[in-house]
Image (cartoon, rainbow, N blue to C red; front, side, top):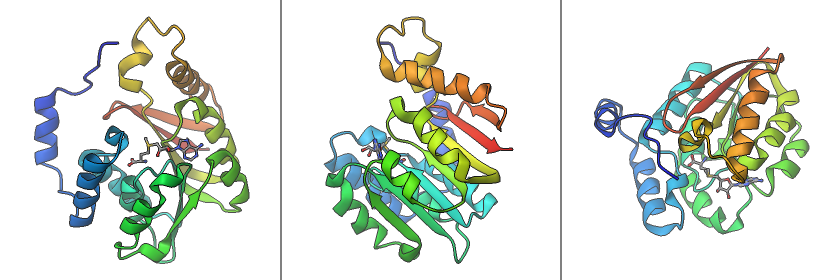
Length: 216
Ligand SMILES: C[S@@+](CC[C@H](N)C(=O)[O-])C[C@H]1O[C@@H](n2cnc3c(N)ncnc32)[C@H](O)[C@@H]1O
C-alpha cells in the first residue's frame, strides 16, 4: 500500500518550527514512548498535541472524554483546557500501558483532574453517567461507529466530538480497499457522519485527518 503524504515534509517541519514547543513533561513522554513502546506511531505528535490543547483552551470544557489513551500524550494536551473544576476521563483497554500512563499523569500539575479507566470503551462509556463537552475518539478504527453512537447521546447540545485518523493514511481515496476492514470502517464512519442530521461536521485535512463534529 503506498503511503500518502498529506502535507509536504518541508511544510510540516516549517509548521512545527512555528508552533509552540511541547512542555518538558510532554517531551519526555513522547521520547520514552518512541524509545520503549512497540507501536510509537500511535502517539499524537507536537503539532497534533498543540492542536488539541488549543481546541480545549478555546472551548474551556468542564467534562472531556477520551477513547484510546495509549501513553497519555493527547490526554495531557486536552486536559490543559479544562476549567478549574473540570475533569478529563480517558479510557485505555491495554492494561500493559497503565503504569506508564499513571507515571506521567502523576507528574502533571492537574493530575487530580485526570481520571484513567482501564477497560474496553464500549463497556466503560455506558457506565459513565456524565454529559460531555468534548470527546476525542482515537482507538480501534473498526469500532469508530460504535464509539460514536455510544457517546453521542451524552454529548451536550453544542458540544464537540473529534475523531482522529479519518483519512487513514490516504486509503479513504484509494480504489483498492479490498478486505481492509479498517479502511472500510473509516469510510463507513465518514459517510455516516456526513449523513447524520444530528450533527454538523468538518473533515479537517490535518495530519491523518480529524473529523470535527458538533452536536446540534
Ligand atoms: C492511536 S492509540 C491512542 C493515541 C493517543 N490518543 C495519543 O494521541 O497519544 C489507540 C489506543 O486505543 C486503545 N484501544 C483500542 N481499542 C480500545 C477500546 N475498545 N477501548 C479503549 N481503548 C482502546 C489501544 O490500546 C491504543 O492504546
